[in-house]
Image 1 (spheres, helix red, strand yellow):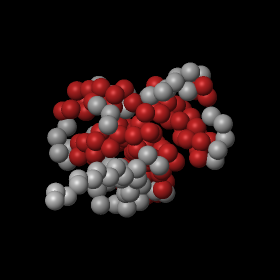
Image 2 (cartoon, helix red, strand yellow; image 1 turned 135 degrees about the vertical axis):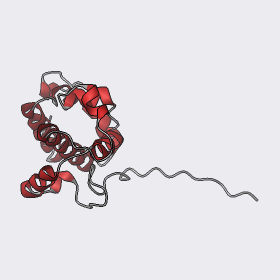
Image 3 (cartoon, rainbow, N blue to C red; image 1 turned 30 degrees about the vertical axis):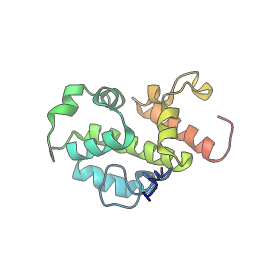
Image 4 (cartoon, one colour; image 1 turned 180 degrees about the vertical axis):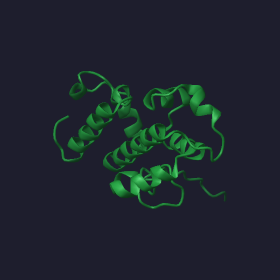
Length: 153
């Protein structure tokens, strides 16, 4: 008798650990400002970008939009070559938003879908559409916070 193959999908599969820092259990949204500053001073490399790309499922075009850089700027770095301080800061901020969203939604796929859906609280824009500046990123974080606490958003 052949064993029946069962596929189990874990909703919380990617909810553990940092998005861009391998081997770190603490997600970016739970890091203190001082921990983030320390990591930022160490520099964020192409390796960090590739982890961010994989965990967010954003391609180079989408990442270049939200990080406010050209696609070629992202692609030309290799391995441990680091990005500018400003790009690194935006990468860390994006990882913070995604780790917070993954925690609140408890399902990475649902959060990624939500990021691209029109939202009344954002004037009909999708959260992704306003991630290209610090004010938009803060508004998305605030919106996720309202969802976390059950405030209509």
